[in-house]
Image 1 (spheres, rainbow, N blue to C red):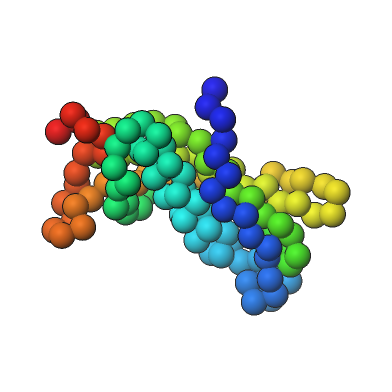
Image 2 (cartoon, rainbow, N blue to C red):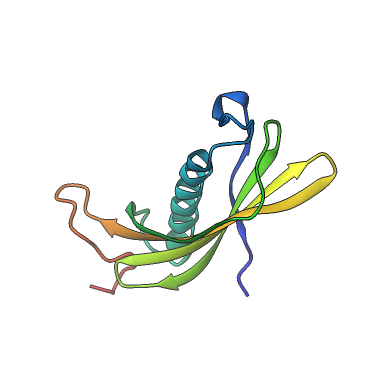
Length: 130
C-alpha cells in the first residue's frame, strides 16, 4: 500500500459557506482538484519524470460523507491509483480536524492527463513511454 501524500491543508473560512453555514461542495471539489494535481506531479517526479503540465479529465466517485464547517482544518491527502502512458489517476481523501476530532469528510478519484503546453496535446508522463 502506498503512503498518502499530504498535498494541501487549509482552514475553512466564512466566505466559503452556503446558506446552511457549511462549506460549499464546490469549494471542496476545487481543493480536491488542486490536491490531486499536486499529488500527481509529486508521483511523476518521484518516478523520474519531469514536472508535467496536467489537465483534469475526470473526477470520479466523489463521495461527500460529512459536512465541513467554518474553522475546520481540512487536509487533502493523495494516493496513486493508476498509471497510464499520458494519464495518472489519483485518490484524494479529505479529512477535517474539528477540535480533538478528525473526520473523514469526502473522497474522490481524479484523472489527469499530461499535456504539451504549446499545443495542448497529450504527452507521456515518464521518460521512455513514447
